[in-house]
Length: 80
View 1 (tube, rainbow, N blue to C red):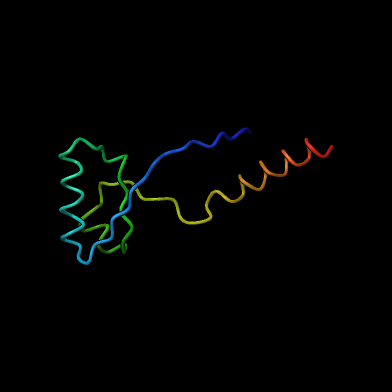
View 2 (cartoon, helix red, strand yellow):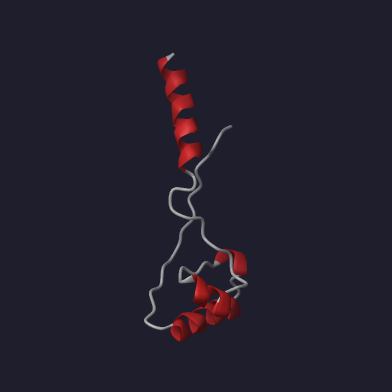
């Protein structure tokens, strides 16, 4: 399996209240962003209440096994 990294710029916003985050999400959607382009990191309780229709980001380390396998294959090819 071959993985090709892609450069995808991203922006991060940090908000003190859920209401501020909700307003920011609504403004981004009104500006033409799609729900698939947005992600919100918050507690499960707030996600269900306010952001249930947005994608959930992958947990940290969820792509580690693929990275290890790809790195091992590249190393074996170069070294072998």
